[in-house]
Length: 283
Image (cartoon, rainbow, N blue to C red):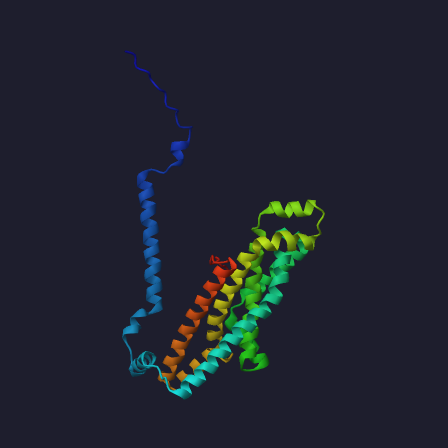
């Protein structure tokens, strides 16, 4: 009986040297864990979360008002009017942002094959638009046009245009290149290639991003009202100033119902239009 010996390939020179020893890896892991622990403790200490347990009389009154909202007819009528204003700001801002985001996205997308200078200018403009928070835009527009929904609508539209342009451009660039190439080889012009080969493939993603932006606009319009841009946020700020915590509870509950309702409607529309995947967003 013979025994066959097999020869195992040897590791290339330097392979073992590139792998740190277990002791060094353990020290590195401990150092990283201690660093993360230090950052967590530092952040929690700076946030002063311990003050949450020191509720004064006003804090108790606020919590009691939120838990017992005022459901009287005059309050509900005012809250309904403020909620309608918030929805109007969100939708109007979305429409205006689409008008600016659509051409920017086409210029930014590589599948459109525009001049590099035009693409760079469009990307820079979109980055500038989305780089400034909506709250700063709202403060600027309030100082220009005064208090009211106009300032909130403009703030939502300007920031949303930059964000939608970036996300839509990424969707346009992610399409399958084979139909695009076939359309170009058939002699189609640049506009025809985009309309017939690019947009049909990107349509579900574009619609999904559009609906998601509407959800974001609802939440943003609520916050912007606190600086005088109209809607539920302005009513919340007024309730706090007047110490009307029962009305504050009604407004907070309305914001929650409104956001959940828009989210449910958005999911249904996504499923109906074939765009039911929630997109990953970035700024």
